[in-house]
Every structure is written in structure tokens, then in C-alpha cells.
Image (cartoon, rainbow over all chains, first blue to last red; front, side):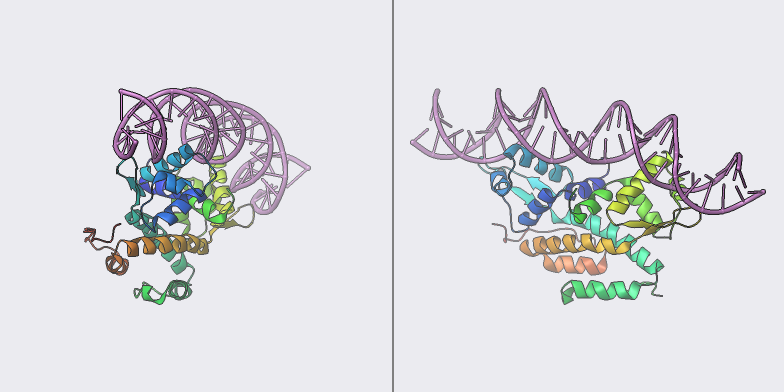
Length: 121
Length: 121
DNA sequence: ACCTTTGTCAACCAAGTGGTTGACAACTGC
DNA sequence: GCAGTTGTCAACCACTTGGTTGACAAAGGT
């Protein structure tokens, strides 16, 4: 898997890894800690973490004999940029940009309004 | 791959498929048309389209002997919702929500320095 | 009717993925 | 030093993936 964007998408294509990422938003966790809820071996979790690390989504440092896992949320931007770019383009094409912008404001909390309307139809 | 969100992420983890999606934002394309730029067989492209279709990203209808491929941009929302939810949560946790909101509106703010103020545990 | 165009299905193959178990490395604490 | 805790590495296995080629189905053009 050559490019990082592909690695990020691939990393998040697994429900277990998405759940790990979700839990890491609460703060750093040790590997054992992360592994607890899943019914797989610690080694399997270690592999999942390697995938997340290769994608740039997490970093691991050392602290005593623990290896705390830390989420690097900046990488999300890679995806959102890609997604937003083409979503916007597609919706414009279909002449439904208004509906999209409205939905974007409804779905999220109201503080996230995107005041930028492009070439509306 | 059980859930749709996983299928969508997996579908976009391939550069060829991402490129197809990008081109489909310009409008519908026939399979041959879509296949033209890539140095793979038509069957391989057909497989890629099946992956995109199973993820709900495209639909295919019939029109003469052609099978025009149509992008369903709504599925992007599945991802953006997931991403935004946890990104937001992570950024809040790190006490950098202001910077994030600013970046979301500017879309290209070079202030990527994050001084890691003492919120870390 | 027949042939061409367009695309899918089936079988196959090499490489990758997600899981396992066993060995072992790194660090802590007695 | 030695035992325990924490985590990784290596080998292996079943399954999936992305590619191939060959056969064939569906619709149009003549």
C-alpha cells in the first residue's frame, strides 16, 4: 500500500481498529488496556496497532514497561480533505449543493457552519 | 466485511478506485470509459466497480448495451460523520478545538504548530 | 439472422490480511 | 540476580484481494 491516504482508509476499514481509535480519543491507553474489550490475543491487537501506526494515526512511546498509544488526529484531515473535495464536486454537479450544505449544518452541532458556498446552482 | 462503513473505507483504500470516484464526480461514465486510463483489464475494472457498488458508492443501470456508472455521493456522509465525531472529540481532549475550528473554516491554515498545553494526563 | 460492442462470470494465481501460538525482549520489583 | 509484567517478533494458517485469461450474456447495427 503505497500512499498514506490509502493506508489511512485501509486502517479504518476494520471495525476493531475504528473502535480503538474511538477509545483513544478519550486519551492514551496501554496495549493491554486497549486489548481488554476484544476477544482476540494481545498479539492480534499489537498487529492492529502497527497498522494504525503505519497509517500515521497513532504513535507509541515508552513509559516504564508500558507502551502508551497516542492518537494523532491530524491525519484525519487527509481524509476529510479528499472526501469533502469530491463530495462537494459531485453535489454541485447534481445541482443539490443547497441541500448538502443544509444537511451539513443540521447533522453536526450548529457551531460547525461552513459559511463558504461555492458555485451554487 | 459486515458493516457498510467498513466497506466504504475499504473501497476508498485503493488509489484506482479513488480515482474512479473522482472522475465520476464529473458525471456518469460507461465501464469502458472508466477503464481507459488504467493499465488493467476490463474485468479488473469491473471488479473494482463491484466493490464500489457493494459499498453503496455507485449504482449501475442499463442504457442500450452500456452500463452507466453513477456516483452516490450521499454515502460520503457516513464517513464524514464518523471522522468528524472522533476528530472533534480528540481535538477537544487536546485542548486545541479553537485551532481546529479555525482550520475547518480556512481550509488551509499553515499554523500546524500545536504546543500541547498541559491537558495531557 | 448474424456479428460487434459492452460488460460480467468463473477459474485460477500471487500477495496481503487477520488470526493463532511460541519465543523472547525490555523493564520493574522483590 | 531472578521472577513477573508488558509487549513484539516470527512462523504458520485460512481467507480475501487484485490481477489475469477464457467463456458467455445482452443489446444494437447491418
